[in-house]
Image (cartoon, rainbow, N blue to C red):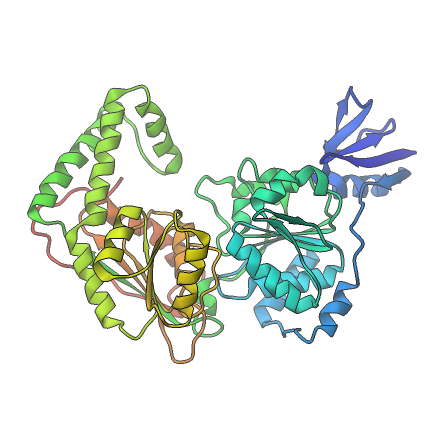
Length: 481
């Protein structure tokens, strides 16, 4: 008789039978496998008609979650695509990732999955803001206390919400206590540390939720092993004008001054000449990381890297961008606006010149919450931020987004567009990109544009304008990185 038990994120398989994904462990005198493979191993033993004793799961005592959801009075009807997504997940044995745009109701899909599985559930989220949002909605939906793991608290209950950081810390002890794992913003999961949350868990049901499945480092290929592959997908363009607000994208051209152009060309020449001299080709983040590593031991590489950064700073912070931003703000006096930048330097300049509250990673949590609450209530009509609001907030009042500077990240681009797509009667969402023409920023903008233009149905319900140009007073530079 084979005996299977759980120990610190792994399975101990006692008995003289080799099973898939298991290796011999001399210390325990048994085969051992990551808890991740629990379901596969059980299925293998059943299919092979090998008798076994299963002592793996020690699920938290759990009330009838399906009945609690029905009795709460908060049950909401699923939209057609939400119902389709859950059916696809169910047909894949309750494993897999659902790709749905920001604002399309991923949380409701997760709640219905919890009620449907009717087993202890752990919801894992990337930020404390998302933790509080999920906790609040789960409490309303099930009329019961919800556990919290993160932000200095540790209260484990049949339905618990945790940050990725806290779930990682406690993965070995929680791995057999929950039957369902829900990974919100599941694109975070393949990171080297976080993946152990899935690997050390024996949970037989797993659901990933995201608006952006692909990662720049291509580690999304790990999701198939950790939580199941993509089983359903809807794009922004398919829901805009129906379940999401209709939108358009406006690209506004800014120009360097003559003096800025001379400086830009000088810095850029140092950078590009080094690449040509060494034969280096920068195709993406991995190639760029090689240059960063090389700069630690090669003075010429360091000089090229610093020159590249100086050129980017000029493109990101030109006075022309501030003038274009002023025009956009004046044209949208009655709208709610998020301004996104890549670096804090531009955040603080915009905040100072336009008296707009700023949120950066250094903003204290209490101040950040206060700013967002005043934005929701209309006391502030605009907020400027660097990256920290790309995900993990629920501010449906915003309908205008302005990217004052950004990277080529498709993930960040989709998240920023999603911030303004909550449907509001009679309102069209507009995403502005202020791009310094004839600089590397133009190429960066083209790459992130692919996040929308290459998606199924793009252009059907979302509209995009060509760049509105302002003649550059100086000469041109190559627009690639």
